[in-house]
Image (cartoon, rainbow, N blue to C red):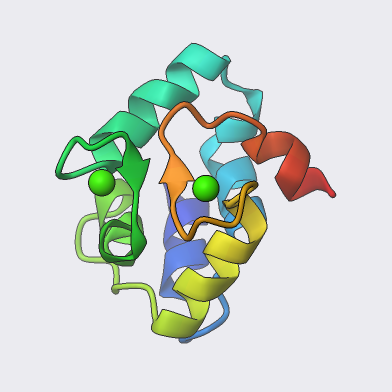
Length: 101
Ligand SMILES: [Ca+2]
Ligand SMILES: [Ca+2]
């Protein structure tokens, strides 16, 4: 949608995961639906979304979008990685409570 393109077309290092999730409506989805989205993002199917997989995050939602920068990926992980192991579990457990805080 228009809003998603605006979010993804912003200049480098301006990506805000929380705002993007809100624009996508992900924050209103059930845990099961969120898990489905995260499973798509998990390219190698190991149950975690790692840095490499986050890099193509915007492109998953908007074909032709730019890749996330290292800085944005780090910010994303800082915001969403609740147990600080450097990756996001696809179950999305605690992700929203973590993003809200
Ligand atoms: Ca993975
Ligand atoms: Ca984690």
